[in-house]
Image (cartoon, rainbow, N blue to C red; front, side):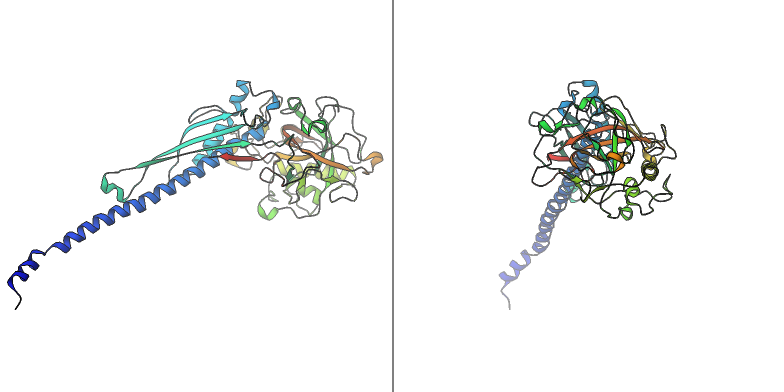
Length: 440
């Protein structure tokens, strides 16, 4: 027989297991709240940072298309010009960069809901790099859902994030540049706003921009002169049709408009020149690129009548135009002033952008190379000259004419030392002026 005192002790221990289970459940629930809810907050914090990064980069992209990538523009102290590009404010700022940043925020939900923009601020002349404008986006997401933490009376939390991005113009530096999807039009280093002593970029000043206020935001018509008359005297503007290596355009990647798109019925016929106007090309142009006989990139030698037809057809397809001449462009550019603002037109293939002011992307925005001179490269209707790429122009195509001339607004420019060494920079492959996060 068991001693009576042992039986009494065991009877006194009844219910201890239940108490231990209850205590353990409380601990487990607490750990669950710590593990699950804290992880949820970490995920939300990461989503917030990604949203802030994306919004800042989108805002900085507006500096590229508007011409605000150089302190030399003379506009950084003009408050009216600044406010067109960016207004230092919270949500609802009227600047183009504000609107683009907030549109991107709306597309990047945090824990399933959009964030609130606390502030968007722009610095047009940072002390460290006065030539590279910056935008800072600060956002917050409140009322984040919690699960197990509700047991402890915690109903919700919030996360915030900040990101700063800049538009980086490497003109005047020793950095080389490499750009893909360049249109096959080679332009002389001659600012049409003055004599050919007035260059887009200055070889005597490390290829820095040369008085960009003379041409940024200005309208110019570039005429094709491969096999035609010699270049007109200054302040004329012309281009040579060039023939990059025969790499296939990226039609399969959606870079080309469909054959059924506006004015694309005669395009995508396998002609490298025409397809490189309407489509994107994988070949990358770089600082120091040689163009001419015997080089990787050569001049088109076909009759002007052929080239001008292909120029007109390819450009109409690119900008989704149904005709030639003024009023037949995709989007509109406020020519004659800086900063340049792009407004969505009726031909924009994205219906959400049709009629929308201050858009940041347009198929009408293209990049073309600048060569190191102003002399005729095709004297006597034979292209015998050789040119060296020393920079790039970013153009907004307003329309194209039946003679192959292109009406444009110059949105931006960058110069590059043809002898520069090192890893080239590029603006996301398609633009010569990259945007980048500098800290977050």
